[in-house]
Length: 346
Ligand SMILES: NC(=O)c1ccc[n+]([C@@H]2O[C@H](COP(=O)([O-])OP(=O)(O)OC[C@H]3O[C@@H](n4cnc5c(N)ncnc54)[C@H](OP(=O)(O)O)[C@@H]3O)[C@@H](O)[C@H]2O)c1
Image 1 (cartoon, helix red, strand yellow):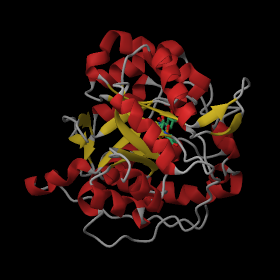
Image 2 (cartoon, rainbow, N blue to C red):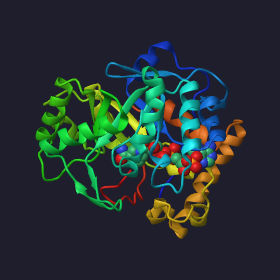
Image 3 (cartoon, rainbow, N blue to C red):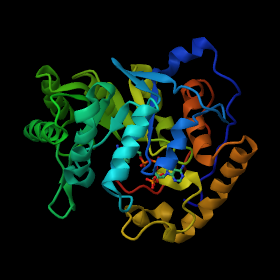
Image 4 (cartoon, protein in one colour):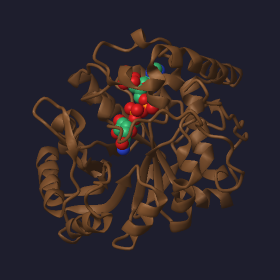
């Protein structure tokens, strides 16, 4: 990851002209945090680089009206070290109170535990929530990933299991988490379409797919959203998926907008991560790479300080700004040192 170049484009000041706001259907993004003090990410939402409190912009994902910032709930049950249930529920309520309404989970997060956690807030505040979950990863009793399953019979089973854990009758946005290489995407999507027809699911999404796969899937049934990693240090989508989404009218939901925490400046050494944190195994978090990446984070922090906001807020402002700019300005160099292992979990 040491070769990654930070491509900074300073956000324009002020709100975009109203005509450009029409273009906002393309990107939603979901940050994630587990501590209430970090709700400052949302409460002092940065627009154009300035830390000011103001309503969160809205986006549309097909027929779903969502705040431009969603809340990813993965870390509340898995991957990012220990979490506290009471604190997680307080964060969920706080996010909803701030106007965040898109909650993102998956059946594999905590092997079902994350969906069960959300059942609590869904029981109390279902009408305020646009609920997104995912299926595809199969995990064993110890949490080990056994594989990816996109077979039609599995799709139906996975959906019923998620509905039961979540305690709802309908999932608003149902994603295929990863494509099963052994099952044609057309077959998986046809099975997902049957869930829409049955009223169990509102809209369909795909996670980490290529533009070509998106096109094939969309020929079977409308795809409302593609969810992919997208942030200042992971810009792969700009080379194929994002242009395809724009062309096809599919929303892009950007996950890990804070670079899995690094862009906040809070993770400077591997030891800043708790024991057992899954990120310790990612190449970009290894000691040498992480140290090299600090130069990028320091540069981000300096720009943020000059603008009176935190690096996390600036990273979110950059993504919000991409809604207007990514189809207009030439895409600059992205993460040439991408170190992804594939498929990634999460
Ligand atoms: N489709 C997929 O394959 C996929 C893959 C990964 C993630 N996702 C989804 O995307 C969501 C977001 O991903 P992510 O969790 O990687 O997002 P992220 O926002 O890039 O990173 C979250 C990390 O940043 C930390 N953080 C947030 N605000 C902070 C602040 N102000 N100061 C210091 N640290 C801060 C959090 O710490 P604390 O938690 O300790 O507050 C957490 O460790 C997930 O929850 C999941 O729903 C999807």
